[in-house]
Image 1: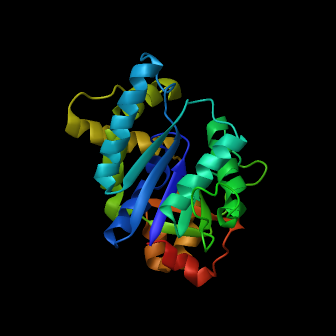
Image 2: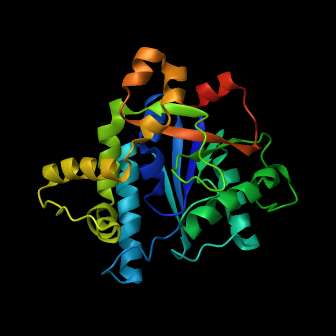
Length: 267
C-alpha cells in the first residue's frame, strides 16, 4: 500500500500521525511525508534563510527515523494560499506518488497554512483523474481515499474519529521523530506555547521531557477523545486501556471505502 501524508510544515506529519506512519512502514507500506511550505518562519531567533536549510535537514532526519520518504516544497511558511498554481503542485505530487491513501489537515484550524493545505488537497481530489489538467503527469486511474488528522477544534464541526490506531508500540519512535525537529520541539514551540519547564541539554533527558511536553499539549489525551473508536476497533478490554493513539476522519472527497476496507487501510 502507498500512503501519502500531506502537512503544511516540516513537522506536521510526524506530530499528527508519526506513529501510524511507522506502523505502516513495519507492515511493508511505502509512506511519504510532504510539507507544502518550507518552514522558514518557525523560529523566534533564526533568520528565514538559514532556518529553511535547518528544517529541511531536520525533516530528512525525522523521516529516516520513521523509515519514510520526505518532500519539502519551496512555498514560504505563512504564505500558503489556495491558488491555481499551488493546486497544480498538489495534483502533480499526488499523481507522482500514486497513493492509495492520503492523510491531511481538516479545513478548520487555527493556522492558515493548515487550512489551505486541507483546501488544496480537497481542490485537487477530483482533478486527480482528469487527464487534461496538469497533463504533464499522467492522471490517476483510481481515486485515493482521503482522511484527516485528529484535531481538537469544535467549530464549525468537531472532529469525528472514523478510525483510531493504537500507537503504544511505536510511541517512542514518534517521540524520536519529533526530537529530530530540534528547532521546533526544543526551541520554537516551547517558546511560543509559553512552556516554562526548561529544556534539558542531555539527549536522553530531552526525550523524557518531550514525552511530557507532548502529553501537556494533548490534555485531555487523543486516546480519551477517540475512546469509542478504539473500543470499537480493538474490543472493550484493549480499547479501554490504550493510552497513546492517533485518530482519523474520513473526507467526503476522494474514494469512499466501506468500514471494513477503512480498517485495512490503517495498521
